[in-house]
Image (cartoon, rainbow, N blue to C red; front, side, top):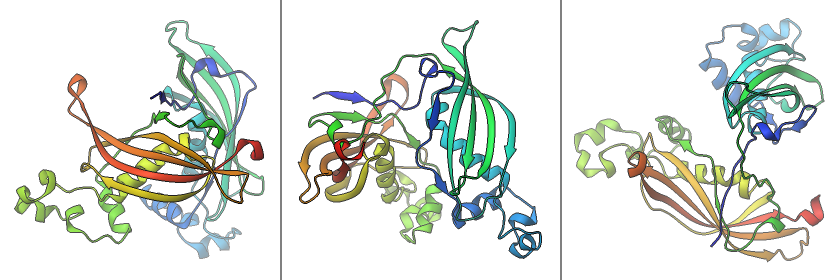
Length: 318
């Protein structure tokens, strides 16, 4: 069957001065994101810690710290600008606009200012861009320039994810991976999962031979969600809903330090009764990790899911 190795991001040859990227998704500043980031970064400014103080100075609520505004806007630009970069070189003229509050949604766009190939290394070049983030009212929250060192390499890129783009028998090898850290313990606790094999290291250490791998095992819901997320850009960006999971299973354990990858096999395409603008995409989602290193690394399947998605048809939405 045909194997399509999906690639995201851009390389030097993809950029042109004057080019504008309207970045996907946007991000709403939730109370959770505000609280975690503000406390993690050890922010002490009471504008971001004390609602009464912030209102006394004319703000409607606590103010999102500038570092978080920058991180949210910057991150939206990564897929289009620097996902395949070698290094982020410089920030230039970063200016903040209207205050940002919990509940605000930030969306970003980037204009390419210049593109310059390296005179010393033909495999590299520098892209100079300006990124602007706006809130839901269109007000500028942040604008800045940056220079990025980008690889000058040809690549295969297929961003199309409408119903008409899929063919039964195709296998999409998703290019992204995500390492699972010991934060899996925190995530498991946030989900109110009390299974001790995910969080009780002392228990495992007493009789390691009784437990899988002799260490804490990652809650299956985490690789489950990772595989869905890793496949999203290639399969589900134009999906309106997941319709059904016919069957799924964990085929190998995941531990802290493992990096999760995913692939999707297209099984069938069907009409959705009563909705000519949509179709049903039947796929098999597989997750895997690698054991060992270098040439001796072995691909280990960790997850299997038969999945049905409702996907928009290009004929009705573009």
